[in-house]
Image (cartoon, rainbow, N blue to C red):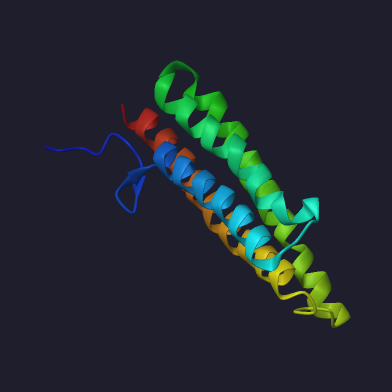
Length: 135
């Protein structure tokens, strides 16, 4: 009987998803800053979250003994990303949504991807707990 031993989504482990998500956030911040011509440090906020995500995901792959604590830190970062993107709701309610297209796009991206990533992490934690309980 082939029992699944590791949580996967889209064919990737949660650590690899973390690395991919971190790389995506880094590229997003760099590309949006370049394309928009922004000189504001805030346009790099996705990249600022991406670097620790990428680093912690890679570390979790290299140091499996520390995977549990590293992934708990990662899910906190994912939640912070989601909450940071939640600022788009304030823009929607105040009527300033899309006044700055790039800022609104970045906030929306952070809200959506942060929510999806956090949900994947929670599903991963539930999977691991169920695996432990079954063994």
